[in-house]
Amino acid sequence: MIVILKKNASKESFSELRTKIESLGMTIHESQGEETLLWGLVGDTSKINIDQLRANDVVAEVRRIQEPYKATNRRMHPEDTVVDIGGVKIGGGNFQVIAGPCSIETAEQISEVARRVKGAGAGLLRGGAFKPRTSPYAFQGLEDEGLRLLLHAKEVTGLPIVTELMGTSDIGLFRDVDLIQIGARNMQNFRLLKEVGKLKTPILLKRGMSNTIEEWLMSAEYIMAGGNENVILCERGIRTFETAYRNTLDISAIPMLKEKTHLPVVVDPSHAAGIRNMVEPLSMAAIAAGADGLMIEVHNNPAVALCDGPQSITPDAFDTLMEKIRKTVSFFGKNM
View 1 (tube, rainbow, N blue to C red):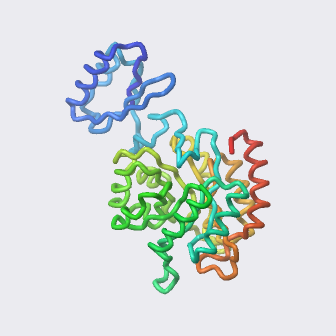
View 2: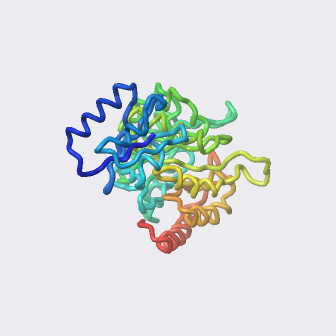
View 3: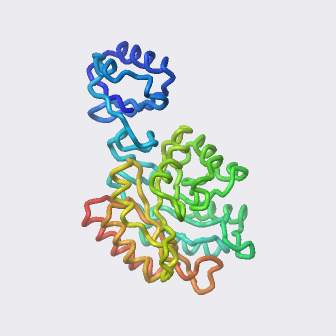
């Protein structure tokens, strides 16, 4: 349930109403907009007499929400959320490109890629230190050492960094990470979601391979319910019957999310298709559909990459792609 409050009411009136609502066992999530003050009521709202609530002098309107998510719901927070990642903003008309290798392999590799993607205009540097792989025999990442190399690349380039957290036991290692990624396989790892909800670090939440939009938003709700409101959603393709490419990029999810939630939406075209030649057209489609950013895999030598070489593009190809991205983003009226 959402309660829209009158702006000119006294603090005493607000306090009295809050006490009355909380006495019924409700939790209140407050959202202050430029024109309105909203209260989202979480709990058994059947205890509330809507007519009596509407009759209160400080109440302008009362609306019932049928969706189970509250903090992520655009009805509760009509204005777009802007997430600040080390001075780099995503959302609310701010578009960013996150770029870098799927996995960190050597100091030379991450340093070269970091330098090149910064030069091309990327706003954030990605790199996998801990890698969840389907096969236990595949390269699992350099782990602690990989994270150290990524942090060094951050020092050298000044780019905020993005990397994946796989378990609660590693949270202490991520103190200097600017944007923590929760991968598709962990989208419904609720214990992990609760723990990152206690952090102030922004979270990039990838959609699970077979999860609905509502399930995805409920996972974001776990993070926000813990107190961390800096959440970015990442569409990375879903599993369908099609076998011509790795996953099916759900372009429809972008405008649907824009209707349902105020959170920024980033698209990962590299993981979606798993084919480097499809990265550019999917990137253009994502921008046109309203995405707030892209996450693109770039490797200095994809032919010898230890992880996801077929979907990684070269730094030279990234230079060309960024020129097209800038023009397309500008055409649709976003800042980059």
